[in-house]
Image (cartoon, rainbow, N blue to C red; front, side, top):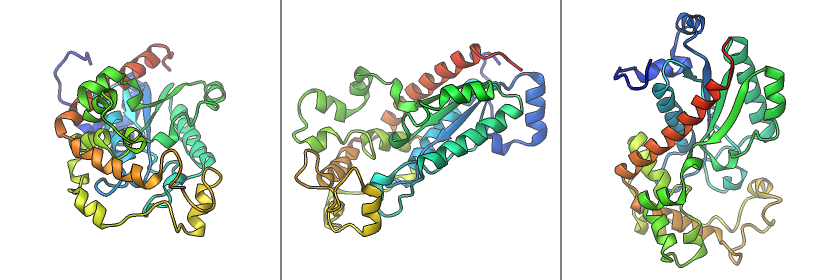
Amino acid sequence: MNESEQCYVHPDRVMLGECTRKEIRERLASGDLRGALLPIGATEQHNEHLSLNLDIVLSTFISQQVALHLYPQVIVAPPLPVGYSPYHMARKGTLTLRRETMHAFLYDVLKSLRTHGLTTALVVNGHGGNHGLLSDLLPDWRQELAMTIDEVSYWTGMNNQQKCEILQGYRDLRDGKLDTVARQTALNHASEEETSLMLAASPQRVRSFTMEKYDDAKLDYANNLSECVRDYLEPTFTREGWPEGGPNPENPRDRARQENALHATVEKGEALASLHTQYVADLMKKMLANSAPG
């Protein structure tokens, strides 16, 4: 289908798990279906207002938009909903995997896809802790599976100018208006950027909040951590917890993220989603062009 053609495709048609075996078989036989997107993310805390599954929801959403953009060439494989998040284990609800568990899952899915004749696969990451997860493994996997394989964190296509055009926090950083290290480093996770994207992609997963309610909760993620939590944080952090006297104290940064999220809007999320989708789609198109069919 030519990208310029205006043709409605139901979003489920690009999700492998929503298709029947007949539908996949026929798309493969026709040569229309050549590649797969594999969303990975996390189930982890995103402050007081965002659902724990934000990272996998957004990487799946971007993957789905890319697959619709490139229909019928690409399918979206079932997402991996838990990622590498040991540093967030002080926050209730967070789950984390070992890196080798994630590697095994992705290799097995890629091998399954290759068995069915797909020669191109792009792992689409939605969680910072997973960034670069496969960089050391990809050369061997490409050779073993005879596939064109790559990985991308969907947000990495944005430059500073685009960030400043869309997001208030980055304009404030550029203009020297953020007065603490905590505020200067609180512009990604659970902040204006991710909250705006979620408002555009899945608004039912965004809860209302105020800074008054945040402060009333008297949250402390730096002290009195359980033995089990400290086991996850080592060796990056001391046995006593996340020191408040360091260069970027944990509690102030958590509050700064909540504060920055107040700038989020649906319109900003739509602009971000458009940029991210185009970036990943362009990468996938290049991969398909460089991968021999069959």
